[in-house]
Image: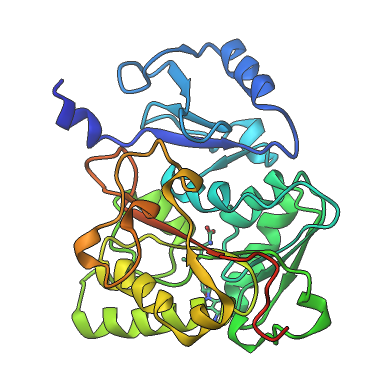
Length: 313
Ligand code: SAM
Protein backbone atom coordinates (compact mmCIF):
# COMPACT_ATOMS: atom_id res chain seq x y z
CA UNK A 1 0.00 0.00 0.00
CA UNK A 2 1.45 3.40 -1.03
CA UNK A 3 1.91 6.29 1.38
CA UNK A 4 -0.90 8.29 -0.28
CA UNK A 5 -3.42 5.44 -0.06
CA UNK A 6 -2.60 4.97 3.63
CA UNK A 7 -2.95 8.66 4.45
CA UNK A 8 -6.38 8.76 2.82
CA UNK A 9 -7.66 6.11 5.24
CA UNK A 10 -8.99 7.47 8.49
CA UNK A 11 -8.55 5.15 11.48
CA UNK A 12 -11.41 4.79 13.96
CA UNK A 13 -10.39 7.29 16.64
CA UNK A 14 -11.52 6.76 20.22
CA UNK A 15 -10.84 9.22 23.02
CA UNK A 16 -10.42 7.79 26.49
CA UNK A 17 -12.66 9.72 28.88
CA UNK A 18 -10.15 10.29 31.67
CA UNK A 19 -12.97 11.34 33.99
CA UNK A 20 -13.59 7.59 34.43
CA UNK A 21 -10.26 5.86 33.93
CA UNK A 22 -6.65 6.38 32.91
CA UNK A 23 -5.43 5.77 29.38
CA UNK A 24 -3.15 3.02 30.73
CA UNK A 25 -6.27 1.22 32.06
CA UNK A 26 -7.96 1.54 28.67
CA UNK A 27 -4.87 0.06 27.01
CA UNK A 28 -5.06 -2.95 29.34
CA UNK A 29 -8.81 -3.28 28.70
CA UNK A 30 -8.28 -3.51 24.93
CA UNK A 31 -5.31 -5.83 25.26
CA UNK A 32 -7.49 -8.18 27.34
CA UNK A 33 -10.14 -7.97 24.63
CA UNK A 34 -7.63 -9.35 22.12
CA UNK A 35 -6.21 -6.20 20.52
CA UNK A 36 -2.47 -5.85 20.24
CA UNK A 37 -0.16 -2.94 19.71
CA UNK A 38 0.37 -2.29 16.02
CA UNK A 39 -0.72 -0.34 12.96
CA UNK A 40 -4.56 -0.31 12.85
CA UNK A 41 -4.47 0.26 9.09
CA UNK A 42 -2.69 -3.10 8.72
CA UNK A 43 -4.83 -5.31 10.92
CA UNK A 44 -8.36 -5.27 12.35
CA UNK A 45 -7.04 -6.39 15.75
CA UNK A 46 -4.23 -3.84 15.99
CA UNK A 47 -4.51 -0.58 17.93
CA UNK A 48 -2.20 2.29 18.83
CA UNK A 49 -1.92 5.39 20.98
CA UNK A 50 -1.93 8.68 19.06
CA UNK A 51 1.36 10.57 18.91
CA UNK A 52 -0.16 14.06 19.22
CA UNK A 53 -3.13 13.54 21.57
CA UNK A 54 -2.12 11.26 24.46
CA UNK A 55 -5.64 10.12 25.41
CA UNK A 56 -6.58 9.16 21.87
CA UNK A 57 -6.47 5.57 20.57
CA UNK A 58 -6.49 4.42 16.95
CA UNK A 59 -8.28 1.33 15.67
CA UNK A 60 -9.00 -0.15 12.26
CA UNK A 61 -11.64 1.97 10.41
CA UNK A 62 -14.20 -0.89 10.55
CA UNK A 63 -14.01 -1.38 14.33
CA UNK A 64 -17.43 -0.93 15.93
CA UNK A 65 -17.84 0.32 19.47
CA UNK A 66 -21.64 0.62 19.62
CA UNK A 67 -21.95 -2.54 21.77
CA UNK A 68 -18.79 -2.02 23.80
CA UNK A 69 -19.69 -1.60 27.51
CA UNK A 70 -16.95 1.04 27.88
CA UNK A 71 -18.50 3.10 25.07
CA UNK A 72 -22.05 2.62 26.36
CA UNK A 73 -21.04 3.83 29.84
CA UNK A 74 -19.27 6.98 28.61
CA UNK A 75 -15.71 5.76 29.26
CA UNK A 76 -14.91 6.03 25.54
CA UNK A 77 -15.84 8.85 23.20
CA UNK A 78 -15.81 8.48 19.41
CA UNK A 79 -14.08 11.64 18.23
CA UNK A 80 -12.00 12.37 15.15
CA UNK A 81 -8.37 13.23 15.85
CA UNK A 82 -8.54 16.77 14.44
CA UNK A 83 -11.56 17.60 16.56
CA UNK A 84 -9.49 16.79 19.67
CA UNK A 85 -7.02 19.56 18.79
CA UNK A 86 -9.03 22.62 19.97
CA UNK A 87 -9.50 21.52 23.60
CA UNK A 88 -5.93 20.20 23.72
CA UNK A 89 -4.54 23.54 22.45
CA UNK A 90 -6.74 25.53 24.85
CA UNK A 91 -5.84 23.26 27.83
CA UNK A 92 -7.55 25.10 30.69
CA UNK A 93 -5.60 24.22 33.85
CA UNK A 94 -7.04 21.58 36.20
CA UNK A 95 -7.46 24.07 39.02
CA UNK A 96 -10.37 25.10 41.24
CA UNK A 97 -9.95 28.71 40.09
CA UNK A 98 -10.16 27.98 36.36
CA UNK A 99 -13.25 29.38 34.66
CA UNK A 100 -13.73 28.50 30.99
CA UNK A 101 -16.38 28.83 28.29
CA UNK A 102 -17.34 26.54 25.44
CA UNK A 103 -19.26 29.09 23.38
CA UNK A 104 -20.79 26.68 20.83
CA UNK A 105 -21.03 23.38 22.62
CA UNK A 106 -23.50 20.83 21.18
CA UNK A 107 -23.32 17.92 20.79
CA UNK A 108 -20.56 18.27 23.38
CA UNK A 109 -17.53 16.25 22.33
CA UNK A 110 -15.17 19.16 22.88
CA UNK A 111 -16.99 20.21 26.07
CA UNK A 112 -16.42 16.77 27.56
CA UNK A 113 -12.79 16.86 26.41
CA UNK A 114 -12.30 20.23 28.14
CA UNK A 115 -13.98 18.93 31.29
CA UNK A 116 -11.66 15.90 31.31
CA UNK A 117 -8.56 18.11 30.82
CA UNK A 118 -9.77 20.24 33.75
CA UNK A 119 -10.11 16.99 35.75
CA UNK A 120 -13.60 18.12 36.75
CA UNK A 121 -12.16 21.14 38.61
CA UNK A 122 -13.11 24.80 38.25
CA UNK A 123 -16.09 25.79 36.13
CA UNK A 124 -16.96 25.38 32.46
CA UNK A 125 -19.95 27.22 30.99
CA UNK A 126 -21.23 25.44 27.87
CA UNK A 127 -23.40 27.63 25.62
CA UNK A 128 -25.71 26.24 22.98
CA UNK A 129 -28.39 28.39 21.38
CA UNK A 130 -30.38 25.64 19.61
CA UNK A 131 -32.93 24.07 21.96
CA UNK A 132 -32.90 20.59 20.40
CA UNK A 133 -29.12 20.43 20.25
CA UNK A 134 -29.05 21.70 23.83
CA UNK A 135 -30.98 18.54 24.82
CA UNK A 136 -28.34 16.39 23.10
CA UNK A 137 -25.61 18.36 24.87
CA UNK A 138 -27.15 17.75 28.29
CA UNK A 139 -27.38 14.01 27.62
CA UNK A 140 -23.75 13.92 26.49
CA UNK A 141 -22.58 15.83 29.59
CA UNK A 142 -24.39 13.42 31.86
CA UNK A 143 -23.07 10.33 30.09
CA UNK A 144 -19.51 11.66 30.18
CA UNK A 145 -19.70 12.70 33.87
CA UNK A 146 -18.95 16.37 33.19
CA UNK A 147 -19.72 17.53 36.71
CA UNK A 148 -17.92 20.88 36.48
CA UNK A 149 -19.98 21.95 33.43
CA UNK A 150 -22.94 24.31 33.56
CA UNK A 151 -24.89 24.01 30.29
CA UNK A 152 -26.63 27.23 29.22
CA UNK A 153 -29.33 27.30 26.51
CA UNK A 154 -28.42 30.76 25.18
CA UNK A 155 -26.75 32.61 22.36
CA UNK A 156 -23.13 33.32 23.26
CA UNK A 157 -23.42 36.71 21.55
CA UNK A 158 -26.01 37.78 24.11
CA UNK A 159 -23.82 37.20 27.15
CA UNK A 160 -22.44 40.31 28.72
CA UNK A 161 -18.69 39.89 29.26
CA UNK A 162 -18.81 42.49 32.02
CA UNK A 163 -21.28 40.33 34.01
CA UNK A 164 -19.47 39.41 37.25
CA UNK A 165 -20.34 35.76 36.53
CA UNK A 166 -17.89 35.79 33.63
CA UNK A 167 -15.35 38.20 35.11
CA UNK A 168 -12.83 35.46 35.83
CA UNK A 169 -13.16 33.56 32.53
CA UNK A 170 -9.69 32.89 31.16
CA UNK A 171 -10.22 30.24 28.45
CA UNK A 172 -12.73 30.20 25.58
CA UNK A 173 -13.37 27.53 22.99
CA UNK A 174 -15.05 28.79 19.85
CA UNK A 175 -16.05 26.07 17.41
CA UNK A 176 -18.94 27.80 15.64
CA UNK A 177 -21.18 26.71 12.82
CA UNK A 178 -19.22 26.35 9.60
CA UNK A 179 -19.69 24.91 6.13
CA UNK A 180 -18.47 21.48 7.28
CA UNK A 181 -16.47 21.26 4.07
CA UNK A 182 -13.67 19.31 5.79
CA UNK A 183 -15.84 16.43 6.93
CA UNK A 184 -15.25 13.22 5.02
CA UNK A 185 -16.23 10.75 7.71
CA UNK A 186 -20.03 10.48 7.82
CA UNK A 187 -20.24 9.28 11.41
CA UNK A 188 -18.22 12.23 12.71
CA UNK A 189 -20.30 14.51 10.56
CA UNK A 190 -23.48 13.33 12.25
CA UNK A 191 -21.86 13.61 15.63
CA UNK A 192 -20.33 17.03 15.47
CA UNK A 193 -21.47 19.28 12.64
CA UNK A 194 -24.95 20.64 12.30
CA UNK A 195 -24.59 21.63 8.66
CA UNK A 196 -25.19 19.40 5.72
CA UNK A 197 -24.40 22.07 3.18
CA UNK A 198 -20.98 21.41 1.70
CA UNK A 199 -21.42 23.18 -1.61
CA UNK A 200 -18.88 25.91 -0.89
CA UNK A 201 -21.28 28.53 -2.30
CA UNK A 202 -19.42 31.83 -1.95
CA UNK A 203 -22.32 33.88 -0.55
CA UNK A 204 -23.04 31.30 2.08
CA UNK A 205 -19.35 31.11 3.03
CA UNK A 206 -19.16 34.90 3.31
CA UNK A 207 -22.22 34.92 5.61
CA UNK A 208 -20.68 32.20 7.76
CA UNK A 209 -17.35 34.07 7.85
CA UNK A 210 -19.12 37.25 9.02
CA UNK A 211 -20.83 35.29 11.82
CA UNK A 212 -17.55 33.53 12.76
CA UNK A 213 -15.75 36.89 12.96
CA UNK A 214 -18.52 38.34 15.12
CA UNK A 215 -18.14 35.42 17.54
CA UNK A 216 -14.34 35.91 17.82
CA UNK A 217 -14.71 39.65 18.36
CA UNK A 218 -17.26 39.02 21.10
CA UNK A 219 -14.92 36.49 22.75
CA UNK A 220 -12.09 39.05 22.58
CA UNK A 221 -13.71 40.85 25.48
CA UNK A 222 -12.63 37.84 27.51
CA UNK A 223 -9.25 35.99 27.45
CA UNK A 224 -7.39 33.13 25.66
CA UNK A 225 -9.45 31.94 22.69
CA UNK A 226 -9.20 28.85 20.52
CA UNK A 227 -11.14 29.27 17.27
CA UNK A 228 -11.70 26.17 15.15
CA UNK A 229 -13.77 24.99 12.19
CA UNK A 230 -14.30 21.73 10.34
CA UNK A 231 -14.00 23.66 7.08
CA UNK A 232 -11.19 23.65 4.55
CA UNK A 233 -12.10 27.06 3.06
CA UNK A 234 -9.68 29.94 3.70
CA UNK A 235 -12.74 32.26 3.78
CA UNK A 236 -13.82 30.67 7.08
CA UNK A 237 -10.29 30.17 8.38
CA UNK A 238 -7.28 32.39 7.55
CA UNK A 239 -9.52 35.24 6.29
CA UNK A 240 -11.59 35.26 9.50
CA UNK A 241 -8.46 35.08 11.67
CA UNK A 242 -6.76 37.96 9.79
CA UNK A 243 -9.89 40.10 10.04
CA UNK A 244 -10.14 39.31 13.76
CA UNK A 245 -6.48 40.34 14.24
CA UNK A 246 -7.19 43.62 12.45
CA UNK A 247 -10.33 44.33 14.45
CA UNK A 248 -10.77 47.08 17.02
CA UNK A 249 -11.49 44.36 19.58
CA UNK A 250 -8.07 42.76 18.99
CA UNK A 251 -6.29 46.10 19.28
CA UNK A 252 -8.23 47.07 22.39
CA UNK A 253 -7.60 43.71 24.05
CA UNK A 254 -3.98 43.34 22.85
CA UNK A 255 -4.73 40.03 21.08
CA UNK A 256 -2.14 38.30 18.90
CA UNK A 257 -1.90 34.78 17.47
CA UNK A 258 -0.21 32.26 19.75
CA UNK A 259 3.07 31.14 18.14
CA UNK A 260 3.66 27.66 16.73
CA UNK A 261 5.38 26.40 19.88
CA UNK A 262 2.09 26.84 21.79
CA UNK A 263 -0.13 25.25 19.12
CA UNK A 264 0.71 21.60 18.41
CA UNK A 265 4.30 22.44 17.36
CA UNK A 266 4.96 18.91 16.05
CA UNK A 267 1.99 18.96 13.68
CA UNK A 268 3.49 19.66 10.25
CA UNK A 269 0.61 21.16 8.27
CA UNK A 270 0.28 24.83 9.18
CA UNK A 271 -2.00 27.65 7.98
CA UNK A 272 -1.75 29.21 4.52
CA UNK A 273 0.35 32.39 4.69
CA UNK A 274 -0.89 33.52 1.26
CA UNK A 275 -4.40 33.78 2.72
CA UNK A 276 -3.35 35.90 5.71
CA UNK A 277 -3.47 39.69 5.44
CA UNK A 278 -1.77 39.87 8.80
CA UNK A 279 -0.37 37.40 11.36
CA UNK A 280 1.98 34.43 11.11
CA UNK A 281 0.30 31.35 9.61
CA UNK A 282 2.85 29.12 11.37
CA UNK A 283 0.72 29.58 14.49
CA UNK A 284 -2.26 27.98 12.70
CA UNK A 285 -3.01 24.28 12.31
CA UNK A 286 -4.67 22.77 9.27
CA UNK A 287 -5.75 19.17 8.63
CA UNK A 288 -6.53 18.01 5.11
CA UNK A 289 -8.88 15.12 4.48
CA UNK A 290 -7.20 12.48 2.35
CA UNK A 291 -3.74 13.55 3.48
CA UNK A 292 -3.60 13.67 7.26
CA UNK A 293 -5.74 10.64 8.19
CA UNK A 294 -8.30 13.02 9.74
CA UNK A 295 -11.26 15.08 8.66
CA UNK A 296 -10.47 18.55 7.31
CA UNK A 297 -10.01 20.94 10.20
CA UNK A 298 -8.58 24.30 11.22
CA UNK A 299 -7.34 25.53 14.62
CA UNK A 300 -6.12 28.95 15.75
CA UNK A 301 -5.33 30.38 19.16
CA UNK A 302 -5.54 34.05 20.20
CA UNK A 303 -3.75 35.23 23.34
CA UNK A 304 -3.25 38.62 24.93
CA UNK A 305 0.19 40.19 24.61
CA UNK A 306 -0.10 41.21 28.24
CA UNK A 307 -2.20 38.54 29.95
CA UNK A 308 -4.76 39.71 32.46
CA UNK A 309 -5.67 42.86 30.51
CA UNK A 310 -9.38 43.18 29.89
CA UNK A 311 -11.05 45.37 27.33
CA UNK A 312 -13.35 47.08 29.79
CA UNK A 313 -10.90 47.07 32.66
N1 SAM B 1 -18.05 21.93 19.56
C1 SAM B 1 -19.09 20.96 19.22
C2 SAM B 1 -18.54 19.55 19.41
O1 SAM B 1 -17.35 19.34 19.18
O2 SAM B 1 -19.30 18.67 19.79
C3 SAM B 1 -19.60 21.19 17.81
C4 SAM B 1 -20.12 22.60 17.60
S1 SAM B 1 -21.02 22.84 16.09
C5 SAM B 1 -19.77 23.01 14.91
C6 SAM B 1 -21.59 24.49 16.36
C7 SAM B 1 -22.70 24.60 17.41
O3 SAM B 1 -22.79 25.96 17.82
C8 SAM B 1 -24.09 24.22 16.91
O4 SAM B 1 -24.68 23.33 17.81
C9 SAM B 1 -24.87 25.54 16.89
O5 SAM B 1 -26.24 25.39 17.19
C10 SAM B 1 -24.15 26.32 17.98
N2 SAM B 1 -24.18 27.80 17.86
C11 SAM B 1 -24.02 28.53 16.72
N3 SAM B 1 -24.03 29.84 17.01
C12 SAM B 1 -24.17 29.94 18.35
C13 SAM B 1 -24.22 31.05 19.25
N4 SAM B 1 -24.19 32.31 18.80
N5 SAM B 1 -24.33 30.81 20.57
C14 SAM B 1 -24.39 29.53 21.02
N6 SAM B 1 -24.37 28.44 20.21
C15 SAM B 1 -24.25 28.64 18.89
